[in-house]
Structure formats: structure tokens, C-alpha cells
Length: 130
Image 1 (cartoon, rainbow, N blue to C red):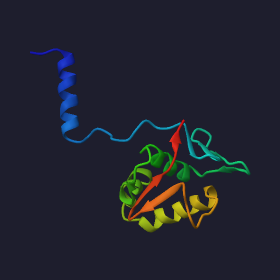
Image 2 (spheres, rainbow, N blue to C red):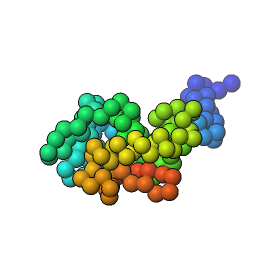
Image 3 (tube, rainbow, N blue to C red):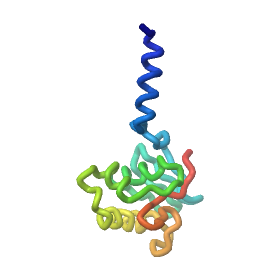
Image 4 (tube, one colour):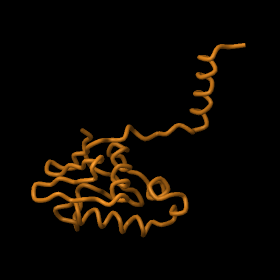
């Protein structure tokens, strides 16, 4: 007894109430994570003044997921579940190893990171999407 537009509106309302809608932002194409470092998510390359760095598919997925959260901290469990899958949700040491590898590839001073920050059990990518 109602039209297709109302049906779609009702479906959208129910999905939103149940928390089914995705809360991440649009996937970035490029991310400037410092004045000297740019990630190209399409090619998987990081450009720095002194070199170009090729990222593995997993490193790229991890950075893309962090970048999609616009500089907000994301929990390690959320990252593990979204990037690796539900079976890795308790693998915080696994995630830490990947973050350390990214620090070594991207940071000027890997021991004092400024691009991928950690707070408690959460991480964020400091950058501006272009």
C-alpha cells in the first residue's frame, strides 16, 4: 500500500537503526602523510624525496583502512578484523609487526614515528587526503 520510494526509505531507516551502515569515509586515492611523503593507493607506491617505496598488498590495505578514517584513532581489533579478517581479531602482536615495518619504510625516524601514531590499542594515520 505504499510506493517504492517509501519502501526504500523504510529499508534505509531500518538498516541505519541496526548499525548496519558502514561508518568509514570514502576510500582515498592519494594521501599526503607528511610534506615529503605521498601514498598512491592505486599503484601501491610511496613517494619520498629520497626514494620510492613499494608496499605489499597487506601494507597498502592497512594504510588505506587507516586513511579512510580521516586521522581518527581506530582500535587494533577493528583494524585486524577489517584488514585481515575475523580470525585475526586477537592478533595485536601481528598488527604491531606490520606497523613497525611501515614505520621503517615510511618514517624519517622509525623510533619516533610521526605518520602512524599509536595510543593505547589504537592507531591513526596522520595525513591529508588529496
